[in-house]
Length: 310
Image (cartoon, rainbow, N blue to C red; front, side):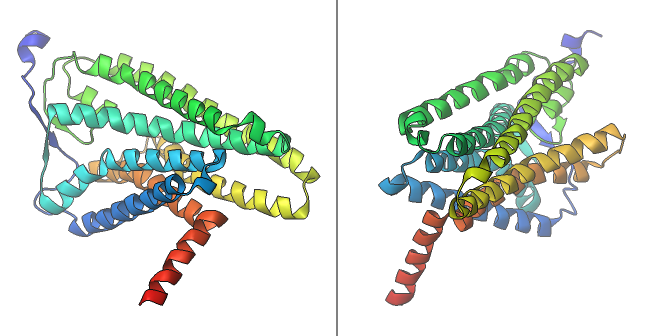
């Protein structure tokens, strides 16, 4: 039987990985709360930075960009999983799944690129403190971030180009990412997986290596700063390091488990994938809300006004 004859006209995907009868509702509630907190924290960061002209500086524009990325990334798949766990909605249309796959991949790519340019920003601030504001102007920062979005959208376009024309032989999947969608097709996905793996490896390797080299450069030049400047820079670096750890650690765990041949259940795979999305999206905005002096002071002022009014 040919592939075309064996293929089916696909209109919906069936979401697997969870028992539709004995759904872990408690997990769904935790995910819902985490998702709402992540959306709230990112929205607060965006509103504060956009509305306050004093925060219209390169570093804060990059924090605002990261918050936008977090919103996109966490909203790409989390609502679908919450719907499965809390409402038992275990189907998604083909078009919605393809869009979700693309948005998810763009969000994951932009998380890495955004943290990379933030590391570059701090490196320039340390090496060229006097020329920093002339080197990294608001206009140049906006241009850089727009270029990153174009690069991310262009790279991920590969997944759409390769996945959408292929015939499908089954409609059951575990997650609307490239791997899951390709496994529903009638072709051997190994070739496509290898191509995506090469792109993902070079992207992850480049961004993580650049961030590490930036830290090395910062640690080398930080000795010329005053004690007060060292404290400020140290606080900024700790914030960035926390965000980097939340993004890359889950990825490294998945790679290590795969490398050692650990066989995961569908539920465990779903949990790891959701963790890779929710962890950075929740931690990033809270880190920059609580560890960035200007944003933290604005929050404190708002709470004081609320207490005074009450």
